[in-house]
Length: 450
Image (cartoon, rainbow, N blue to C red; front, side, top):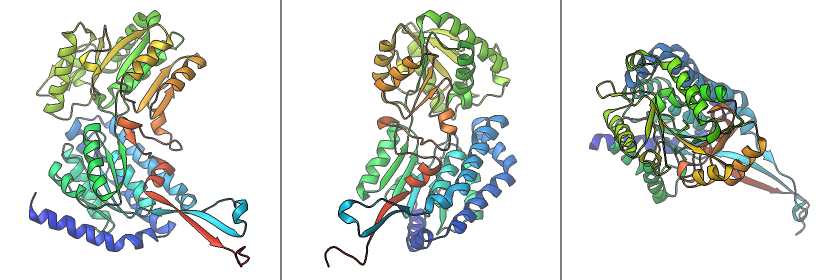
């Protein structure tokens, strides 16, 4: 950490401190104008975005268009449509004891906010919180991931072209930069990443009593009941698990499949994987299939897979790796017990363990033995089965007969619970995370105390 960088951080923090009230009192039109700039920049730089993400993650163009550009633009346009309504004060009903008063709730900006973004979806997981923060009238400091260096550099270019530092500033670099930023008394910190680092962020926030939104992860299960449409479930599991090579916070982390349909489902899932990525390693390496972000994560995945196979885990398909390519093939592995190494922590890669169950109580017990997940995915035609699972487990969100769609629904809050996250984002819920509810009461002329 150089003294020059510390000086820059101090200067930006002071600039934004002086500008915070101006940003708070900005109009709907002013805020829409800031968001419109981002929209226009993304539309004008799609080719550069695609190249940066390919360089960082070997992310296919189709994936970049869907998971980075489309999602960012959808959040932007949804926010621009509704920001006027969100900013309006909300009147509240009078109480009998205070009939002579008028009261309302106004959403005020928190002030100065820090957004620490991950490498997994480095564009949209930086841009979407930025959208919410600006919509709420905040001054923003961004810290993109040092692992997705090409995309982070492109985001730096965007921010510096579009915004003066008193409105939005950006600092790139490693953990030492994040540590320096966390030393400043921001009003709110929005972090997306691992549970381990989330705890560090929360400890830093506690020193200044900063509020936090933590978007973390966890082991999100997929439950396949015997009444499920197996082919439909197999298609959706294959697509959503191996998207971004499994490096997605809401990706299926493990499968719980009813014993009666296990064999059929495994065969269908294997068939879908081969359709999407090819039947041998050479085809898979040439397929539109992302890579692991770096050698460290690549080795972590291989260690967990090898440890599990040594404990009687049976590889159904995949299990191949190329260190130089940072490649791990789409892998299904059948487990004989829930204590296998792959069940100890979030996998965050293209390896999918399969366990079986015989009744709903086994499923509830297995899910509740693991930390509360970000998502719970249930494939069933039995509504009572789904209701029992929801009533007796915890998760940030639930999706029935599909995967990840709860994330795309901009009128739903997105976030975790406990180890999978704190707070909510997307649409109005993102706006609210970067605001605080200010209670305003005005006494009338006919005060009862006169």
